[in-house]
Length: 298
Image 1 (cartoon, one colour):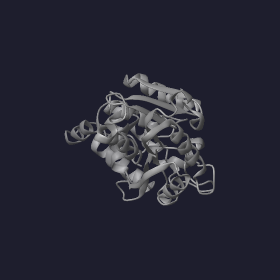
Image 2 (tube, rainbow, N blue to C red):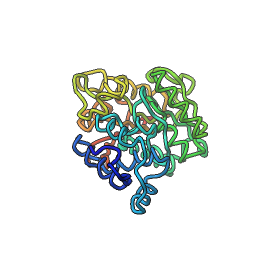
Image 3 (tube, rainbow, N blue to C red):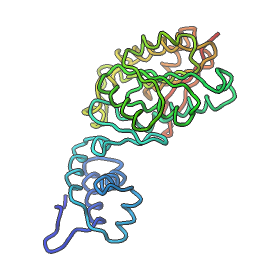
């Protein structure tokens, strides 16, 4: 990568971003241009759109950008370098010890939100539906639901004390009234059994023995948030789903993220329990199976 300065002249922001895109592309990062601009925006404490504007206006490259680009080229997650992860309408704080919310998980939050805003969702507890997020991690799903359905009473639970701390920070920073507890999702909320209108979850689901392709996931996301506890990755998701069935009222709505290879196996396993009806699987924007929805049977 080009050094931070050129003898006898000051490197432009445009040149610095161009060099960053080249370095990140060589490192195998598909989102090289997006990441380069995001890192420049972080260093300059501004927005990506403002960075693009300053590039056109001939602004100078900021100190520190090259160091961050080098870290990103070593596949340190972009979100760890900026300390932030966008999720629907929210800007979440993230870092070591918490799973970085992915774009695919926005589908899970969106399915829950759409249900709550629909006629079928409003027939539950009316103006104040009761929602639970099992395996909340950074709090992404729970906080997005509260942000977009402010009348909902939202609860979340997280097993990892580090991730729980991030979720609490995000809740407090965003000023959203969400109950976030530390504990095991498979035992959580005994006070809410048979009363919940919607349960959402993004549990660990990677099959044991599988290695994530992306170094950002493999080397930086906590293992407790990744692996599903069995060779097919379904042990923990099914245990979480069983708890969801206990928490939901009859007719309550359930949505869970899964691996793209579990688009048939997870719905089939849910059907076999006999406690779910109206089971449907949903593709993400890349056309891959990503989330299952179901209704608690009467």
